Length: 169
Image (tube, rainbow, N blue to C red; front, side, top):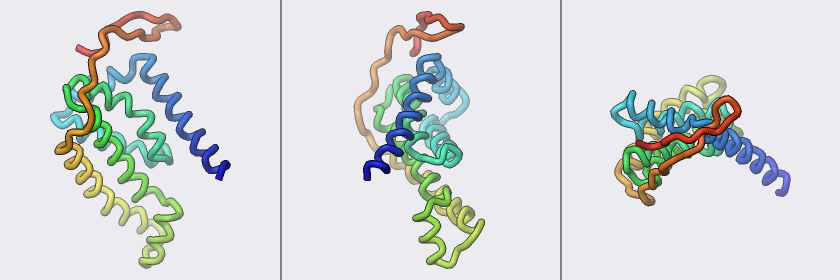
């Protein structure tokens, strides 16, 4: 049991380090700003970002931990509750990783149904895409959490030096 917890801790810590570095170098406001500018449905974009990132990262927890600071920035800029943005991101990561990634539980369940090989991934996509869209619709309708407050000034690392900048407008 301790070995399992140790491995999960490594995954969570690595995701936290990547997310913290992304936030410290000023990447999260830039990503949030791009999401808001390029799409009319930023919650769907967060959901799809989690959906696409979970499989190559091989863990839904890591994808969530990396991008939760982006979800917080999007929530602050749109003045929506943090729980709404986090739920959209979380359900996107869960749907793709749990249904597409050929994990042992998915593989065993699929072989019991007579699905083998690449058909597991194809049927996983068939189930995961509507599931993640249902997660987006749920997140859009729920009102979880409080609206995050905009932070006035944030330090940003540029060329090895920290400068002050405004993170939310």
